[in-house]
Image (tube, rainbow, N blue to C red):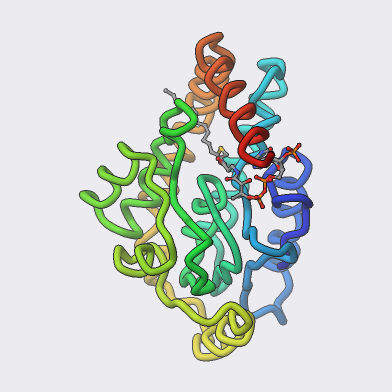
Length: 238
Ligand SMILES: CCCCC/C=C\C/C=C\C/C=C/C(=O)SCCNC(=O)CCNC(=O)[C@H](O)C(C)(C)COP(=O)(O)OP(=O)(O)OC[C@H]1O[C@@H](n2cnc3c(N)ncnc32)[C@H](O)[C@@H]1OP(=O)(O)O
């Protein structure tokens, strides 16, 4: 599955819905042995959630958006397929979450790229299931530090903390993803055993999580922080 939503593969409601439909189709395809997620765009795996979906939108629309974010995570984290993230560009926040749902992460060894949960930099708190996914990937202490600082990691740092499993030359990300994928032939039942408690936690609190998100994101102070962050993104470009 090659992500293609220019300019930066931000995860809008529409794009998330497309991703969910694609994963669902693959999940039902008995001939499909697994999934490699990568990006068709240069330099960016995914810029994370589409910030425009969280800025100036109605509570109803925000709720719909958040349900789609949850659905993407539930589908990928709970997938019966063997999944590999072939991270061929930067992958902040929701992009990092998406790659952490996979069984294995291969990243392009380009020091210009970065990956991490940077929500704190936007003035927002990473939701509990983002935090849980990171804890399951890199451990409690690293997650605590990482979330408090909104830390982004270059590939070497990401490998060191275990946020990615392998660094490869930029032009060989696809080759190594396929090679690694071929070595794993059957999705292991230990995957669902390891992930079930985390998945059950969100499933049981899904509606409350949507309500929390909507009331948090529509607050004037949070809207102001997001507006400032968007301005900063645009200025940085010039
Ligand atoms: C108590 C209850 C708590 C409940 C929980 C509440 C809240 C939690 C909610 C959400 C968690 C949030 C998760 C997220 O994923 S938020 C998104 C975070 N993403 C980022 O911060 C990434 C920002 N982008 C970048 O760093 C860079 O764009 C890039 C990805 C490194 C790529 O750099 P590049 O130089 O290639 O591109 P540009 O920076 O020039 O960007 C091009 C263009 O795209 C716009 N853009 C970038 N990122 C996003 C985005 N995530 N969403 C929307 N738009 C984006 C950028 O502004 C440029 O636009 P322009 O119009 O200027 O061309």
